[in-house]
Length: 241
Image 1: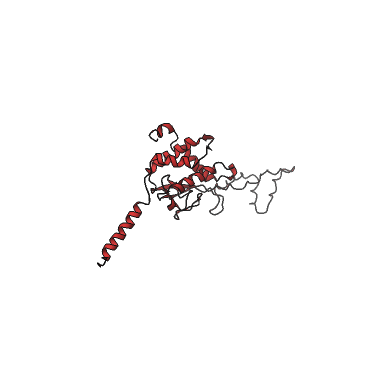
Image 2 (image 1 turned 120 degrees about the vertical axis):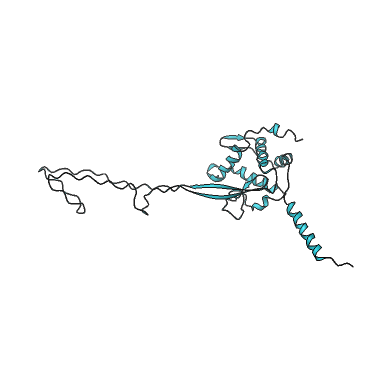
Protein backbone atom coordinates (compact mmCIF):
# COMPACT_ATOMS: atom_id res chain seq x y z
CA UNK A 1 0.00 0.00 0.00
CA UNK A 2 1.42 3.33 -1.09
CA UNK A 3 1.76 6.03 1.48
CA UNK A 4 0.12 9.34 0.71
CA UNK A 5 2.55 12.14 0.05
CA UNK A 6 1.92 14.79 2.72
CA UNK A 7 2.88 17.55 0.28
CA UNK A 8 0.20 16.39 -2.16
CA UNK A 9 -2.35 16.18 0.64
CA UNK A 10 -1.56 19.76 1.66
CA UNK A 11 -1.88 20.95 -1.92
CA UNK A 12 -5.22 19.18 -2.32
CA UNK A 13 -6.48 20.72 0.92
CA UNK A 14 -5.42 24.21 -0.19
CA UNK A 15 -7.18 23.71 -3.53
CA UNK A 16 -10.34 22.63 -1.76
CA UNK A 17 -10.25 25.76 0.37
CA UNK A 18 -9.72 27.92 -2.69
CA UNK A 19 -12.64 26.37 -4.53
CA UNK A 20 -14.92 26.73 -1.51
CA UNK A 21 -13.99 30.40 -1.10
CA UNK A 22 -14.65 31.09 -4.77
CA UNK A 23 -18.03 29.38 -4.68
CA UNK A 24 -19.23 31.28 -1.61
CA UNK A 25 -20.83 33.88 -3.87
CA UNK A 26 -22.38 33.63 -7.29
CA UNK A 27 -23.72 35.70 -10.13
CA UNK A 28 -27.50 35.76 -10.41
CA UNK A 29 -29.36 37.02 -13.44
CA UNK A 30 -32.09 39.61 -13.16
CA UNK A 31 -34.82 37.17 -14.22
CA UNK A 32 -33.94 34.81 -11.37
CA UNK A 33 -33.76 37.72 -8.98
CA UNK A 34 -37.17 38.97 -10.11
CA UNK A 35 -38.67 35.51 -9.60
CA UNK A 36 -37.36 35.30 -6.04
CA UNK A 37 -38.59 38.79 -5.23
CA UNK A 38 -42.01 37.91 -6.69
CA UNK A 39 -42.13 34.83 -4.45
CA UNK A 40 -41.26 36.94 -1.39
CA UNK A 41 -44.68 38.64 -1.60
CA UNK A 42 -43.67 42.25 -1.15
CA UNK A 43 -46.41 44.81 -0.64
CA UNK A 44 -46.72 48.27 -2.06
CA UNK A 45 -45.17 51.04 -0.03
CA UNK A 46 -45.50 54.80 0.21
CA UNK A 47 -42.31 56.83 0.22
CA UNK A 48 -42.24 60.64 0.17
CA UNK A 49 -45.95 60.68 -0.67
CA UNK A 50 -45.38 58.43 -3.68
CA UNK A 51 -47.21 55.11 -3.77
CA UNK A 52 -44.92 52.46 -5.23
CA UNK A 53 -46.71 49.36 -6.47
CA UNK A 54 -45.29 45.88 -5.94
CA UNK A 55 -44.35 45.58 -9.60
CA UNK A 56 -42.52 48.90 -9.59
CA UNK A 57 -40.86 48.12 -6.25
CA UNK A 58 -39.42 44.83 -7.53
CA UNK A 59 -38.24 46.52 -10.71
CA UNK A 60 -36.36 49.16 -8.75
CA UNK A 61 -34.80 46.57 -6.43
CA UNK A 62 -33.54 44.47 -9.33
CA UNK A 63 -32.25 47.59 -11.07
CA UNK A 64 -30.44 48.55 -7.87
CA UNK A 65 -28.84 45.09 -7.78
CA UNK A 66 -27.28 45.78 -11.17
CA UNK A 67 -24.84 48.14 -9.40
CA UNK A 68 -23.24 45.03 -7.87
CA UNK A 69 -23.20 43.26 -11.27
CA UNK A 70 -25.65 40.80 -9.62
CA UNK A 71 -22.72 39.36 -7.65
CA UNK A 72 -23.88 38.02 -4.28
CA UNK A 73 -20.38 38.31 -2.77
CA UNK A 74 -19.76 41.89 -3.90
CA UNK A 75 -18.42 44.24 -1.21
CA UNK A 76 -17.81 47.92 -1.83
CA UNK A 77 -16.19 50.52 0.40
CA UNK A 78 -17.50 54.05 0.35
CA UNK A 79 -16.56 57.18 2.28
CA UNK A 80 -19.39 58.99 4.00
CA UNK A 81 -19.09 62.55 5.27
CA UNK A 82 -20.88 62.81 8.60
CA UNK A 83 -21.52 66.44 9.47
CA UNK A 84 -22.29 67.28 13.04
CA UNK A 85 -23.72 70.68 13.82
CA UNK A 86 -23.21 71.81 17.38
CA UNK A 87 -26.07 74.11 18.30
CA UNK A 88 -24.93 77.56 19.22
CA UNK A 89 -25.96 78.80 22.60
CA UNK A 90 -27.32 82.28 22.52
CA UNK A 91 -26.11 84.56 25.30
CA UNK A 92 -28.67 85.39 27.95
CA UNK A 93 -30.86 88.38 27.30
CA UNK A 94 -29.56 91.54 28.99
CA UNK A 95 -31.93 93.25 31.36
CA UNK A 96 -33.58 96.26 29.78
CA UNK A 97 -31.85 99.34 30.98
CA UNK A 98 -34.08 102.32 31.65
CA UNK A 99 -32.22 105.56 32.32
CA UNK A 100 -33.03 106.91 35.80
CA UNK A 101 -35.11 110.00 35.97
CA UNK A 102 -33.38 113.25 36.85
CA UNK A 103 -34.33 114.81 40.17
CA UNK A 104 -36.26 118.07 40.29
CA UNK A 105 -33.21 119.85 41.67
CA UNK A 106 -31.28 119.11 38.48
CA UNK A 107 -28.66 117.02 40.34
CA UNK A 108 -27.21 114.13 38.40
CA UNK A 109 -28.94 110.79 39.06
CA UNK A 110 -27.49 108.53 41.71
CA UNK A 111 -25.75 105.37 40.54
CA UNK A 112 -27.88 102.30 41.34
CA UNK A 113 -24.92 100.25 42.49
CA UNK A 114 -21.73 100.99 44.39
CA UNK A 115 -19.84 98.81 41.89
CA UNK A 116 -20.43 101.23 39.03
CA UNK A 117 -17.65 103.70 38.26
CA UNK A 118 -17.95 107.12 39.96
CA UNK A 119 -19.82 109.83 38.14
CA UNK A 120 -17.79 112.28 36.10
CA UNK A 121 -17.58 115.86 37.44
CA UNK A 122 -20.31 118.25 36.41
CA UNK A 123 -19.72 119.79 33.02
CA UNK A 124 -17.37 117.02 31.83
CA UNK A 125 -18.37 115.41 28.53
CA UNK A 126 -19.97 111.98 29.01
CA UNK A 127 -17.76 109.00 28.31
CA UNK A 128 -18.91 106.71 25.52
CA UNK A 129 -20.28 103.37 26.67
CA UNK A 130 -18.02 100.44 25.94
CA UNK A 131 -19.66 97.86 23.75
CA UNK A 132 -19.82 94.32 25.10
CA UNK A 133 -17.77 91.80 23.16
CA UNK A 134 -19.75 89.72 20.66
CA UNK A 135 -18.18 86.51 21.93
CA UNK A 136 -17.95 85.37 25.49
CA UNK A 137 -14.69 84.12 26.97
CA UNK A 138 -13.44 80.74 25.94
CA UNK A 139 -15.27 77.99 27.75
CA UNK A 140 -18.19 80.22 28.72
CA UNK A 141 -20.58 78.31 26.47
CA UNK A 142 -21.71 81.45 24.67
CA UNK A 143 -19.62 81.06 21.53
CA UNK A 144 -21.07 79.69 18.32
CA UNK A 145 -19.47 76.32 17.68
CA UNK A 146 -18.24 75.65 14.13
CA UNK A 147 -19.43 72.75 12.03
CA UNK A 148 -17.39 69.59 12.36
CA UNK A 149 -17.21 66.92 9.66
CA UNK A 150 -15.81 63.44 9.95
CA UNK A 151 -15.09 60.92 7.23
CA UNK A 152 -16.33 57.40 7.89
CA UNK A 153 -15.68 54.40 5.65
CA UNK A 154 -18.86 52.39 5.16
CA UNK A 155 -19.18 48.99 3.53
CA UNK A 156 -21.92 47.86 1.13
CA UNK A 157 -22.63 44.13 1.03
CA UNK A 158 -24.12 41.64 -1.35
CA UNK A 159 -26.24 41.80 -4.44
CA UNK A 160 -28.39 44.66 -3.12
CA UNK A 161 -25.45 46.60 -1.64
CA UNK A 162 -26.88 46.86 1.86
CA UNK A 163 -24.90 49.08 4.21
CA UNK A 164 -23.27 48.25 7.52
CA UNK A 165 -24.47 51.66 8.64
CA UNK A 166 -28.08 50.57 8.93
CA UNK A 167 -28.82 47.06 7.59
CA UNK A 168 -26.27 44.74 9.16
CA UNK A 169 -23.38 44.57 11.61
CA UNK A 170 -19.89 44.29 10.14
CA UNK A 171 -18.12 44.68 13.47
CA UNK A 172 -16.17 47.62 12.02
CA UNK A 173 -18.66 50.50 12.39
CA UNK A 174 -21.55 51.42 14.65
CA UNK A 175 -24.73 50.19 12.99
CA UNK A 176 -28.48 50.37 13.45
CA UNK A 177 -28.50 46.71 12.37
CA UNK A 178 -32.17 46.89 11.45
CA UNK A 179 -32.07 43.39 9.95
CA UNK A 180 -30.40 41.93 13.06
CA UNK A 181 -27.74 40.05 11.12
CA UNK A 182 -24.03 39.99 10.40
CA UNK A 183 -22.95 41.49 7.10
CA UNK A 184 -21.10 38.32 6.11
CA UNK A 185 -24.50 36.63 5.76
CA UNK A 186 -25.17 38.96 2.82
CA UNK A 187 -22.17 37.77 0.79
CA UNK A 188 -22.85 34.04 0.41
CA UNK A 189 -24.66 32.34 -2.47
CA UNK A 190 -28.01 32.34 -0.63
CA UNK A 191 -29.96 35.53 -1.28
CA UNK A 192 -33.04 34.62 0.76
CA UNK A 193 -31.68 36.46 3.81
CA UNK A 194 -30.83 39.46 1.60
CA UNK A 195 -34.44 39.56 0.41
CA UNK A 196 -35.68 39.10 3.97
CA UNK A 197 -33.63 42.12 5.01
CA UNK A 198 -35.16 44.14 2.19
CA UNK A 199 -38.66 43.18 3.34
CA UNK A 200 -37.79 44.32 6.86
CA UNK A 201 -36.73 47.71 5.53
CA UNK A 202 -39.79 48.06 3.33
CA UNK A 203 -42.16 47.07 6.16
CA UNK A 204 -40.74 49.84 8.33
CA UNK A 205 -42.45 52.34 6.05
CA UNK A 206 -45.82 50.87 7.06
CA UNK A 207 -45.32 51.66 10.72
CA UNK A 208 -46.79 54.73 12.30
CA UNK A 209 -44.70 57.84 11.54
CA UNK A 210 -43.64 58.23 15.16
CA UNK A 211 -42.42 54.61 15.24
CA UNK A 212 -40.22 54.87 12.14
CA UNK A 213 -36.54 55.55 12.90
CA UNK A 214 -35.68 58.72 11.00
CA UNK A 215 -32.38 57.31 9.70
CA UNK A 216 -34.04 54.18 8.31
CA UNK A 217 -36.84 56.16 6.72
CA UNK A 218 -34.30 58.30 4.87
CA UNK A 219 -32.45 55.20 3.67
CA UNK A 220 -35.63 53.69 2.24
CA UNK A 221 -36.44 56.99 0.56
CA UNK A 222 -32.98 57.07 -1.00
CA UNK A 223 -33.27 53.48 -2.26
CA UNK A 224 -36.68 54.01 -3.79
CA UNK A 225 -36.42 57.54 -5.12
CA UNK A 226 -32.85 58.09 -6.23
CA UNK A 227 -32.12 54.61 -7.50
CA UNK A 228 -33.64 53.47 -10.82
CA UNK A 229 -36.63 55.77 -10.49
CA UNK A 230 -37.39 55.90 -14.20
CA UNK A 231 -37.02 52.19 -15.03
CA UNK A 232 -40.09 50.76 -16.77
CA UNK A 233 -40.92 47.19 -15.75
CA UNK A 234 -42.15 45.69 -19.08
CA UNK A 235 -39.08 46.94 -20.92
CA UNK A 236 -36.61 46.02 -18.18
CA UNK A 237 -37.82 42.41 -17.96
CA UNK A 238 -38.64 41.98 -21.62
CA UNK A 239 -36.18 39.06 -21.95
CA UNK A 240 -37.60 37.18 -18.94
CA UNK A 241 -40.04 34.36 -19.73
